[in-house]
Length: 519
Image (tube, rainbow, N blue to C red; front, side):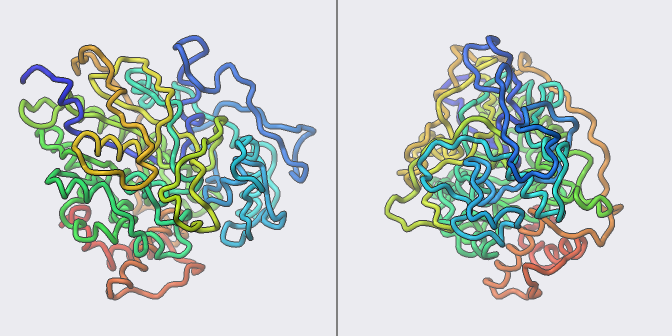
């Protein structure tokens, strides 16, 4: 193999995006005070959130201090992640008061937004919002131990793969997601620097699969004759990335969307594309690190034993595949950057206020729910892995999801910014700061915790379809309808079983992703 050259350090970029965890939740205890020159974590800080006066069980307490997660499925149930919930989490506001204890779809304007959205968020509403979410989900006021778990995070010992890689390479303690809301908007910004004005996943159902018209970085790569692939972890039947950008990428579904088994083969054979995007399994048996979907229905199992443990196992597979790459002419460990991040904070606590940010188009009218896209989303975990990065690097400059677009544009001359958002994002090239590269045999080894077996066939077929799988179903139906395909007419408020939902997705749209369904 030729000697490695810094000029080739970004020949291949691999991004793995997990789900719904804040920086404090997974990396807040990565370093102790004084262990590195600078690190904005939770160790050595007295962090807490107030308990609202209307909480049912306080035990005489007025606040919940930040602590350590008691298990690998915390918080459970899943916190609120929609724009309305995030407003409360960041600003401590429930406005109008009637929004308390309601599902997001039933909340009224101004959707818990503060009177002055330009004010720095005090980050003091996580407990209040979680209590309100639990009331909406369960119909009762939760006890202290139930809602206090929102103020917990994990230790390096609990997350050994993530912590080992973060300490072995670079972590970012100022990496922000793009929108103070949920999955689809933030994943859209990752590749398009826009969400076409939408902030929630499924209101309306056709918002992303049919109406999201934003140009993507995938198209810029195509225009330059550069390769890309989206790798989805089995048993994914569809790609959420494809669904979000269907209006732009529909003709690529059959050719550019494959499984992570193919990623392992491509890495071993030196045939990784210029840009690889790895999508965990986001549906049933999910290993995306997302909090549990259905734990408030203990008699209707839906989740794996722990999506965190499953996610670490996937991350270890991807890392080992990149580390082992030794092709003399194609992709290898020397010329590949592996970036790991999370789409959004998913309602989990973080203490750093999100900054103001440039809107995609300052001349555009306000988007969904009146949001103007001038506020960033919450801080999320992010790691950069490369032989050109010194160990225990902490990057404290502001980075964000659109830094991926900026990096790809800079590396391959892919034209002007997609929007005003990626125009102001930092590129990742300066992070590769080592004077000489580290040979892969000197990189840290990772050992994920054993993943308990998960067998979807053993689950109750009557379990309700909820959360992201439900969003995927209605997105598929909306897209199929727009394409003139035969699809059942279901109401968004209709109860649908997990088994029926997955069957509908496969029957209606499985053939559109042959690379994920044995085609």
